[in-house]
Image (tube, rainbow, N blue to C red; front, side):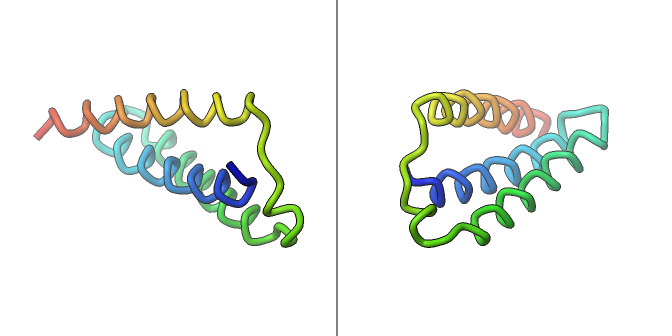
Length: 83
């Protein structure tokens, strides 16, 4: 996975987390945190040079993204059960 794709996918995951946490979390600041993180990932993706954007991410970053994806999906499931 390239750095650019990593940042774009993390942006999407943070947006999804923010939306799910609006429903699930009792702490409204948590949703705002992930919304801000999504904006940060977008800015980082846009600031990459072409050469940097094509570089591969480390397996550690890939594993963190995978774990975060699972967590976001669990929050989305919790949110869907509220309706």
